[in-house]
Image (tube, rainbow, N blue to C red; front, side):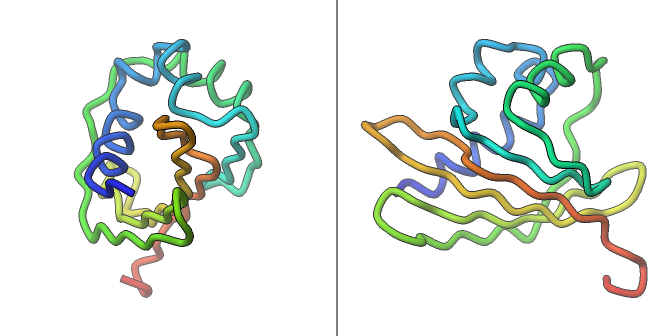
Length: 117
């Protein structure tokens, strides 16, 4: 599994251009994609694509603490931290490679309290 490709796809998903491009989002998100947002809300693929398509321009956030684990052949976990205007958050995603196609299957974001940093 090409872990640098996963990081590049994660960074693409953080860009306004990708988030507003419903076709590209459908390519990157698995049909059974689920996200648990920083608010705790559960999002389906269709819900997140519709919501992000209407999102305004935003700067790509600063990220660090990237970690990669290959869970099984063709299945990988990535974790990282986003430093945003509303505070820091930890993120985890599960990516799948199927027939050469990289797709996110699951994502979760969690705000980091000042005490936990």
